[in-house]
Length: 347
Image (tube, rainbow, N blue to C red):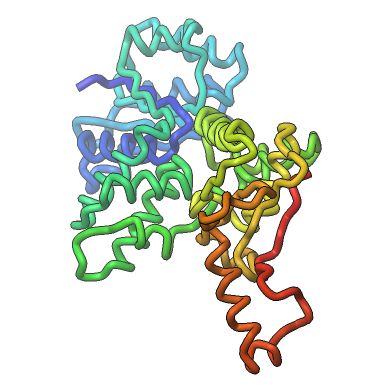
């Protein structure tokens, strides 16, 4: 086993698990009082770090020194560590952690030459569902691939948050061995959904300050690449709606966030897709509690005679009810046969 290790990357859960596993394999718990040292490089001089690395084990075969936040050292201080490593391996098991180290630097090359580098990079939107499936398996549950994908869409690719959500789902299903999409929709947090649509709304409104605030909030839990992918996905949906033409009807279901009609209308206007006569029909009382319902995007033209549009059945029902005494008493003054669904104009 190598005595020099560097864990580098922005996925802190992978780093934490990797470091703990290495320490457990290297040093028994009963020997850690005298032979385990933790150093914060941000608050420790490089000379003291090298002194601790040179300290021999006490009443044991091995000594472990964990040096955190290596990237917090200045360039000159990193040069001291690099020169130390190039003189040979330390007599202890040295474990360094850093969120970001320049792969072209002499310090990084010294770790590559003398020891082992453990990448702790964030999982991509394609890799995260597989990780969630493995996490569920360790809890004795099976999460369907489509459910794992939906979970990543809602909470993002951060493994710590993703793991907590899987644990919550495992507790929710109880004795049932499988986690479904319905379970995810019922109990999973909607962290990414809220933030990414706030960001796309701000971009559509050309509000730079609001967009930067939303982006800063989103990047606290998400890697930049998945964020870029989610923004691109939202605008692809808007582009498909714009390109569908005046006579099309698009059902926008659960993927659309709260207040779907309003949000779609804003997005279409932002990309130049609002056309006279086009409207978005939302369910009655559409609001945050109706996020899972469908919204119909419909042109202002009536369907050809003999064909029923998506709202024709609802209008016919209202017209029939208006002919009854109960329907006349319950009429609010609107014209019979007109849909009660709120309309959101798109231009």
